[in-house]
Length: 223
Ligand SMILES: [Zn+2]
Image: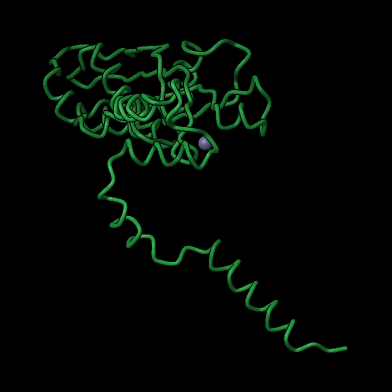
């Protein structure tokens, strides 16, 4: 038999369940509300929501440690790549390929805030100016210490070298492993992602192959 009362009860129950799962306010309003809490208070709340007891010995100092470590891992936002390069440009009469390979890179993917890490290879053919070699590693560091996607990181390194010294061309290759894929079991554990950005004369087949043969073992010819 049709029971109107139980139907109304059921509707109420559903409405309550939806109200709990759906955000009640807009994202911006919630942000404003949260700004009065310290970062450490918010990490304590996250720990609580994970089912942990933030007061237990091992976790008491964790919010402070996480805050400090995340600040370090994203310190690239506060650094200006143009300024770093400006102080290290030299006039030269040299037009062969300059290569800096195997630069260690650690970054955080912006989708999961999990690490991706690997090696960066950078090359360029000068047109009157070169960059101090250590500054290329610095440049990689500045862009890597931000929330990133590998493709953009590759492109930003190439573009900022191009902008700083207007060389004949720039090539950047990054080989990296992503913990968001490895730990979550989406991809094979040993798979690595290779990205490249080629500017100017590095778009020509000969220059590009010379660069790639110098930085990558013969078995990798996928670019
Ligand atoms: Zn990710």
